Length: 121
Image 1 (tube, one colour):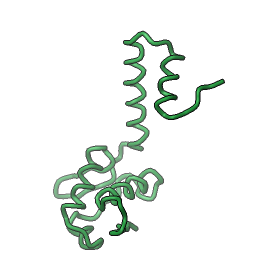
Image 2: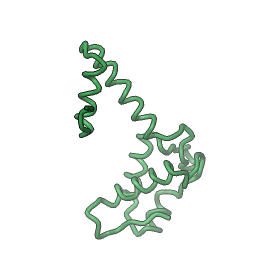
Image 3: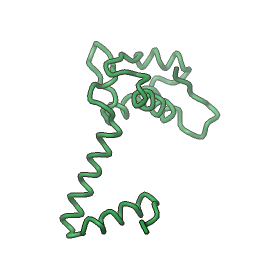
Image 4: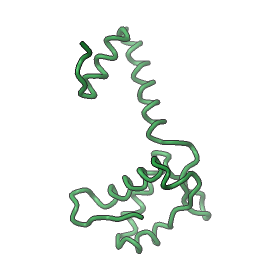
């Protein structure tokens, strides 16, 4: 069940995007599940179609959902998009750290600092 809080400081498209992403990540929306059309979801939630379309575009860009032409929009079958993107970012970081000649310990130190984690004792 998707809900948009009009009094929230978070934009409606972002509320919708985050809720769909969370439902996919937790299994509430299984791979292959057909999503409502933009117009139907907009009507159901009392939103402008452009708001729903923007949420869908961003989810499609992140490979969370996929549009199959006239057949509709579905939850993508490619696994957890957050894990895929995190792995890609970690790989890019490791590659760049190697190019810069950093030791693994130095690279991990930078990563820990970027994440706001304390240095190991």
